[in-house]
Length: 209
Figure 1 (cartoon, rainbow, N blue to C red):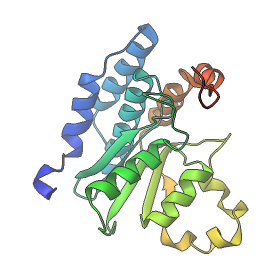
Figure 2: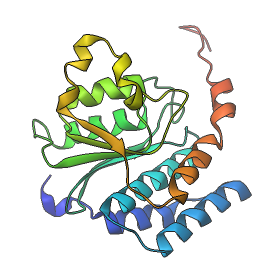
Figure 3: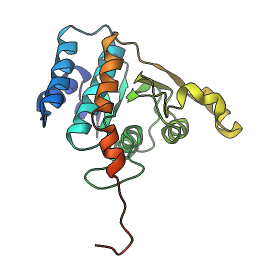
């Protein structure tokens, strides 16, 4: 893969939103809010990348997964990897948080490449599992749109064991700089099916039907 194959942020986000297929009126309303946010224009690359992460989160819930999306982008708006939560569909995968999916995709497409100059944007503050994976990955900057008061780790880094705290200087974690409505929209996308999916993820015995 070479740089000519890397999509541009300004094209990718709008393309993904246009292709998203809402399944009901609530999803259609979320899509309209995402479109309205883009129509007002973006303050910066951070604002647009945060919005694109929310578009990916919307795509995730349309696919039957938890509404979290993420992407890796450089300062010129080139998107090197993108994806969303895949825990529930097409099959159960306990590791398939949005950040994990995107980092794994990057490392597959760009093997042994440094992540200098790249930023990971996610629609939701990284959880403990994703936080430690990010520290190991070599990413230097991570920005999230919505705080996760229930399970986020970036604002609780002081609670990590010393081994992980020693790696904290490798990466800067911060909220994405966006317009005021976007974090609330990210939360509404997450909450669309949060309780429903949380109560239906059931594993069957090995060898069961």
